[in-house]
Length: 442
Ligand code: UGA
Image (cartoon, rainbow, N blue to C red; front, side, top):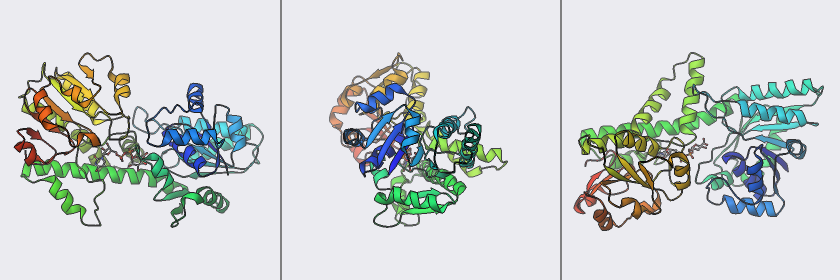
């Protein structure tokens, strides 16, 4: 099938590459000329396992093209994906300006029936806005007789496993009331829908809300566990034992019940805020969502509180090693990352930071490169040199079994603040460390 994808950000690029991989003929359109040139050369702006080779191979095979030429894109596709960003407005609501701009562009160049697929995470009611925008432009151009449908088809991919998630989705949500559209969407997704029928068809607004509901549910699980971890610390219980104990109940399950330093990234914080804002707008008090958000904000400060307490508030001139800057492993993304809240608090308190992350060093350089109290180190070992303590913020695989004896030789006192519960407290004490973790007795 001929497919056009507007937006070569995270979602658009992965979706485009994966659709090309199964044999669809994909044209990706972006307004950013430099980005398009780089993509044509196989330079991928984001770190995502498996993506670079997939883009290169499909581009070389002629199944995946990149262009700034919107007219060509619209002409090419039997379906038109909108996969552009919906950044939060100042008040936290999702800004639809890029989505609506693409809708207008599609309408401008449309000369036959089209299916417009909304892949971006957009507030409930956005498909109606896209529909109105397309109608308006078509009318202005005197082509109001051209038919079209706007489908909500949210994505559920995770950073770090985006390609695999997209190739093997656990569900494919299709929000439309048009039978012809459903048929086309079934054909488009047939290669991903083989073992069992993963397609769930519903009305547009339910599909839009499904995306937010899924992310808000996952964020709720995390905030719940962080609340339990805080309680466990105060009650002398071990949250890791509790996690195993409750996860065994299939109604709860083991996924997304890891306590830590709070959720970050480009999705949960933004989507929570957007849904809270949308609720406020219709005079509905989303009490639970607000609590989830506020617990998360607080959780991002807990490591700092422990550090400050340990040093009796005397952080001026102290030097800390930080392992992990990205908001989670297998990504270089530092958007809303807990590491940022921590570093900024340490700096405000007069401390210095020596940081290492396996992938996010460039991003850290871009964000904080000029900060006088930050040294970015090439290895996790180098980050330890002459520091007062080690702080672990992201659970990268290669932090899981470090050389503890070496760590001891580098720290002025053997103290580790672990925001991800990577090690066994008893063993750490036996090794001679003062070890702080989340929700476990120290
Ligand atoms: C999230 C969802 O998991 C995807 O399904 C969704 O498609 C995506 O948002 C999106 O809307 O685009 P992502 O933000 O990539 O994906 O990252 P997650 O793996 O969900 O992790 C989010 C945050 O929660 C991370 O900071 C992670 O450290 C934290 N987390 C996760 C916990 O603190 N505990 C857990 O048990 C799980």
